[in-house]
Length: 163
Image 1 (cartoon, rainbow, N blue to C red):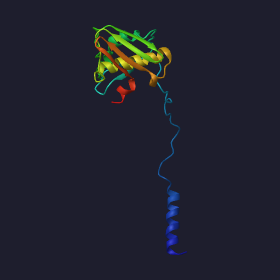
Image 2: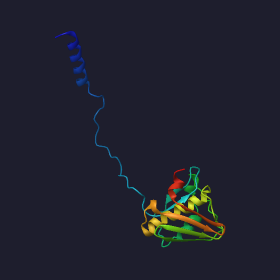
Image 3: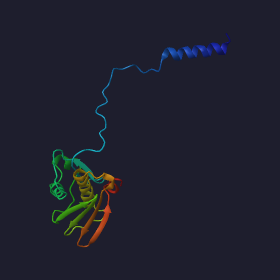
């Protein structure tokens, strides 16, 4: 055998004999599989990074207006400690209706701009309620805010979450 062939053969045998260096392990549990869109009611509160949804397991809503009590009750102590807050003004009166995924929020004094965090809280919470109540696809829900100063929207929750 020539010298280059001998070197190549030795290198090949060394690679095959050495393996890849990763030792075999036993079976590991990867945890539960991804479940997709969370089920049940979620409420959105303000945070430094934009609106953040929190689950309310076991909470049942029968109409869109039920979400205002949930929102105005504010985040739990644990949620506040993690940086969440409620910026929706509790002085206004709110009423929401929907038709085919188009939600109309009527209020006595609130007409938030898209830059105001309370708008994101209301839009995302109402959108989630529309999904829970009527099975509307989340990307199809549109929320229009109507106040004494005019109309704003329609908004979709996604536009607030992608900031």
